[in-house]
Amino acid sequence: DHLPVFLRELPKCEHHLHIEGTLSPELLFKLATKNSITLPSDDPAFASPATLKARYENFTSLDDFLHYYFIGFKVLINASDFEALTYDYIQNAASQSVKHAEIFFDPQAHTERGISYDTLISGLKAAKTRAAAAFPDMSIEFIPCLVRHLPVPSAHTMLEEILSAGHFHDGTVIGFGMSSTEKNMHPSLFTSVYKAAQEAGIKNLTAHYGEEGPASYMEAAIEQLSVVRVDHGRRVIEDPSLVARLAESKLMLTLCPVSNVKLRGVSQIEDLPIRELLDKGVRFSINSDDPAYFGADILGNYQAVQLAFDLTIPEWESIALGSIEGSWCTEARKQELR
Ligand code: HPA
Ligand code: ZN
Image (cartoon, rainbow, N blue to C red; front, side, top):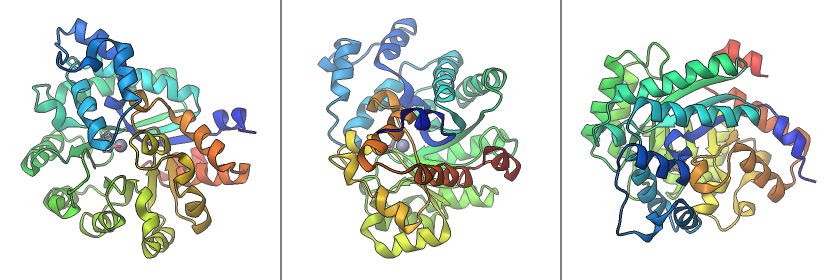
């Protein structure tokens, strides 16, 4: 059986969720109307929410998805738009026993189209404040990601702006990450940005690698960028010595099983190295990445893994515990979560 009640009630931590990836086709069209944004007229996918949703069933790669993902950004204008997106995510996550969520956002992809960092972060913070009252047993954190398709100086500007706002030190954001296109984006291109982050005292560093790119990119991110977590990281399995190293260091991978199938990294969930990672003692969490684009929220991802791997209750409990230990919260908060 698929342990439906157990999986829903299992206390979860989500570490790999892009807030912009929770924008549904319906809301995209609603916000386009509200904010007077013209959607691409040369792409039949934008005829209606239904055609857009159908197009999302046929992503061919990470870059094919990113094309649509960044078009979606254009309808997000006001702080209240970001607040609504974030609050809706939190509400659904709470209903699936998510107790701790670390939410990614892509500041550069908003500032480059004229939406200020301040607008964005005030929307996220407003949602967090409302959630604290409605879901007092849940903790919510935010992580800005640099986007690899924009020039490196743009990433430095973003980091500087968040640092000058004091937001890394007052807890408004808890770490620093990296997302967007991966092919040909070797970690060495971004050493100056991660070095600046480290010099500013930021220890919670992560980066998307090993989604489409090889295990050697993951290793380079660990060595050259000092990341203490890798987002996706599914291709670690191609390098047994890196697997052994991760098992030893307990560096956590934030796996996104349904995402990997939808973007054709693997043809089915069964092809992910979940069994091997469990057996070798590599720490990982299970996450939804961009649920509105991939059609599965965090519980949908847990269920898909269960359907494919038929894990035991003790195995699920060890995944849940590992995702607490790998979270970027205080030791006191971890103790509450355990
Ligand atoms: N990979 C890279 N960039 C992204 C992703 C992803 O899974 N989701 C949103 N931006
Ligand atoms: Zn991602």
